[in-house]
Length: 340
Image 1 (cartoon, rainbow, N blue to C red):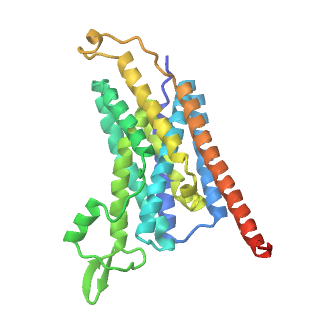
Image 2: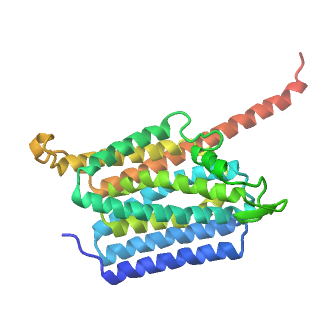
Image 3: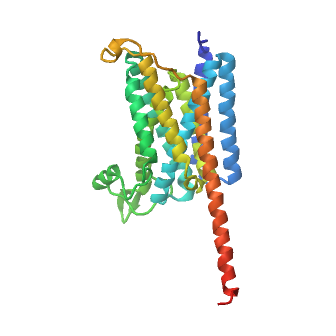
């Protein structure tokens, strides 16, 4: 039997997490800047440590199931957040956001992500409670999303999105930024700055990623508290991770395959769980189907292995290409000294 978490712990955790996010946001507004590698590394480490301490508290105040579900959920959401971050890189680059204000754009994007995911968590929990067969839909959606990850051109997007084109038709925009402002004056006329387009793009991206991440974590745990806290911890260090990784994300070529493997695995797990708890009359006469139900520890092991293999394989490829490039450069430099 699962041990219930103390109510004071759940409420206290939510208050502390919201306070951390507010302080983070105020710091960015007060002092916009590009963090150094050292600063970004420290903050990413702090947020990872906080997540691990929170997992430890769940093990102590709850039980092994609470702790393992949080770890698996947090790692899943962190993996998907890195994929989200890759798209953020493309958006900020496409709109040429000034470096000093990229932190503000990222933080607003993260807050929007939390809002959308919070709404989806509430809706998802209510639907699952009344209709467990929704896991069939969630599972198929995640498997399809996994395919979208690995098919050619999965991350590529040329030009403005449909939403941005529609916004541009009805609202006047300036060509230049005015610091971090959303509105500016050009030749005496009030106009919106491209910064608003950036926020709209980030918001639309967050909405799409919420459609993937929430079904994924509900495949690991059905506790709304663990689902939400795992999402918060995954998103809290995302801004600093952006500056820490920089252009490295584009070089981690196999990362998308690791993320796709996780999505497909959880999709299969959801379908198996739906069959295990089946109540649909047209499947096995409405009786439970005797299929294996994948446990949380197996999910945790698969998630860690998939991300580790994808990251290591990407790094090995980068080093091989760098070594091959150095060898070609060496041979090219030696050619003028050779006799015909």
